[in-house]
Length: 240
Image 1 (cartoon, rainbow, N blue to C red):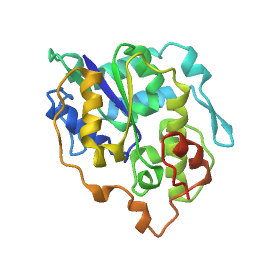
Image 2 (tube, rainbow, N blue to C red):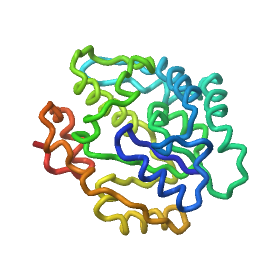
Image 3 (cartoon, one colour):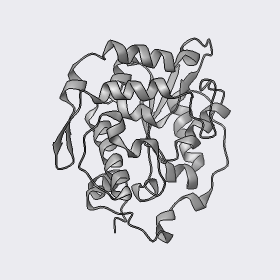
C-alpha cells in the first residue's frame, strides 16, 4: 500500500507523517525534523516543470486545464522517481512519503499513482500563514500570481492557490480528508478514521493544544476575505 499526504506547508502535516511512521509505514529515507522525505531538490524541480503548464488568469484564478488534461511531462516523471527512489525501491508492505511541495503538483502525482491512498490535510489558514515556508514564493515554482510586497498576503495567496489546485483535481479513488485541529483535540476519532481507511492500527502521538488558534495573539494581518469560502467549506465557521 502506498500513501501520501496532500497539504500546504505549516498545515501540521508533520503530525500525520509522524503518526504514519510510528504506525509502521515506511515514509522514505532520510527524513528531516518535519518528517519530510529529503533531499527535496528533485521534487522542487518537478514542481517547476508542472508550474510551466499552469496559467494565471488574474483575480486569484488559475487555469489548470493543461495539467488536468495532459499526461505528466516525461521530465516530471523522472524527477519524481528520483525523489521517491527510497520509497519505490522499498519492499515494505506499507510505504509512502510526505513533503508539502507534493501539493504543488498533485494532479500529476495522482496520474502517476492513481491507486495510492491520499490524505487531504487542512489547517485554519490564519494559523498556516504565521510562519514562512518555501512555497510562499510561488514564482520559484513557475506559478503566476498578483505582485505584493506584503509577505502575509503572499502566504495567503499561496494557501489559496494550493487550495484551488486541490479542489480542481478529480478526487482519487482512495481519499480521506482530515483537519489538523481535529488531530489535536479529537485524536482518537482521527485515528479511528485512519484505521478504517488504511486497514492498519494507528499509533497515538503527542499533540500540543497550544498549536491551535495561535493567530488569536498575532498582531499582524492574518485574515483575508478570500479565505472565507474555503474556511466555511472546511468547517471553520469563525471567519472574522
